[in-house]
Image 1 (tube, rainbow, N blue to C red):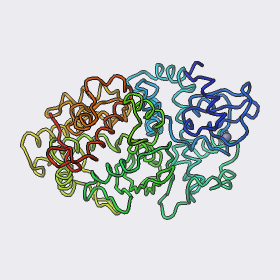
Image 2: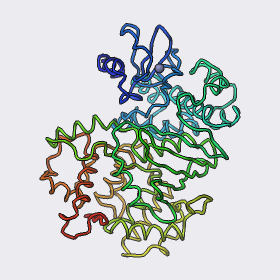
Image 3: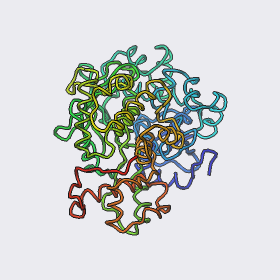
Image 4: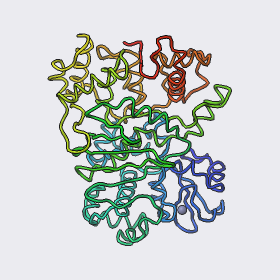
Length: 494
Ligand SMILES: [Zn+2]
């Protein structure tokens, strides 16, 4: 094991077999060429004496290596480790991907994580091979490359959109990371079919994922929960608008073989990187499904019925919590109706195929009681949660720990274990939350004779186990005593 936790033999085997599953999980720096690659790079496998394996592109850049322009290591899926690891380094990587350093610098990053800048820099350097500034710079270089090669934007617009402080810094970074000027990088465009050019401020990107992917599950999940006015499921594509750090974005996504096709229309181009990070999080595109499926199959002592199942994440923490609370103890269809009414009354109108953004927590805190129907206690609970979010008493972002988020959620009136677990799982893309109080999950467990009090052997993948059980119960409606499986999502809350 190296200082950064990578096993040389395992990494070298992945490189020798060009195993694309490991793309994004580590980087291969080749001393003889001064270049770093993704494991599946089609170039001749370098001699073992010439390679070093590094956990991040930033670490390779720090050591003076340049990105391979043949395999484009920055275009791989992200590392699943940033979701499976709950430590400081992983939480920092999630926030860096969301653009926190570009918006507030290292002080904002350290603040969000609850550490001093010095402690944070020390931990990141030890574990990821680069400090927060270098990690953020690698992230900007990636965004810059994407924009250079997929849009007709001017270089000065790209420098701004990618988060650089000046055009000079942008030029210097691109030259250092890719060994060519931005102009030359643009001339090499589309060689790898990574994206198509933008038109009229919209941008179509391919968001890569690791195979296999259980497409029916993900599509069922997105379509079944789609709320009129806020989301649209049409011709196998999911469309909606979302709030972004500098405004809003309209997105349309569809699952394709090997990638998700995403068309983005951004109010402010600086929101590109955070928007892409959020879409990847929503669809769990950084997961390593082969590793997860092997572990679950071993636990179940049999093959998995649905290889590549994903745990849906979220685009917006407050929206996730408030919608989950609206859906407590009612069917998915009823939850969609209630949510649609709230959105129509309090949502923010936006141009695009879907008319509204989800209401702000402030709007729901102030006027939710006029609009929401149903039991008084539930309405009070939702308005109370909105108030906590609006005042900043409750903070939901992906850089927090699962224990802290769960504790804060359980402290709210009307939030029980089901809601706290479900929201924590989706907010943090946490892989190991067993939804043991969910009636559908329990039914799925009964169907296959699994004891939910004895699931330690499935750690750390119990969120994925929950999705398998959920799907299994929904696809066996005959076994559902209330005959409502497929539509009903009853829960024991709170
Ligand atoms: Zn390469």
